[in-house]
Length: 286
Image (cartoon, rainbow, N blue to C red; front, side, top):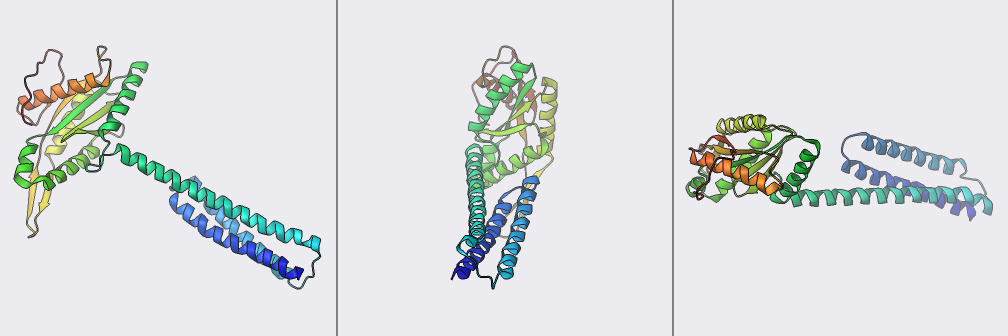
């Protein structure tokens, strides 16, 4: 009778370890490529070796007649396997929970249409960058981008095409800015780029590069009949830099918006940097 109990404990522990290997595989799939994933793979290999050890022990003592005290080793095998299973299950659940929280946070700060940061993230991040720039005496600039005659696009092609244009613009801007730049949707068809550690001259150069990049590309529209049409868009950009007189981020954004308005007034498809001597009339349709 005791030999049956001993074998059940050993084979039961082996079965638990087998189940643990599947849990570890699921866990590895959730991890990004890197050192952590490799360590879990090593742990999975060790678990397989443990399984082989369990089975080898059971075969070696198959016809053995144990005493009551001899059940200690099979018990250790069984509870050791249970510990491995619980550890892997908890690790998997923790990883899934972290990924879920990260996804929710990403959705909370990302504009679903364009795929860039939203207004909520913009306000929080710009305030942080202003504090950092002031603390370390670093330059900081923002660029306000707006599609020229976007209302005309919606009126001519419909709002679904307008959404395609916004999404396409987001991809073009992300592909043209630097890795350190932060692209956000300010509202409507207006995007804002936070240019970290960027002087006024460098901000103007970045804005002009963006303008030329957008102008050089076209969105290809396909109809249900298979016809293809190229839609060219242009943008106007207003640039503003952090100056000693600016105390909060809305003032910096407002200056970029004023410069953007000047670009619109001057004929669109151009870059204007904020000047304290510039004035602003009543807003016009953009």
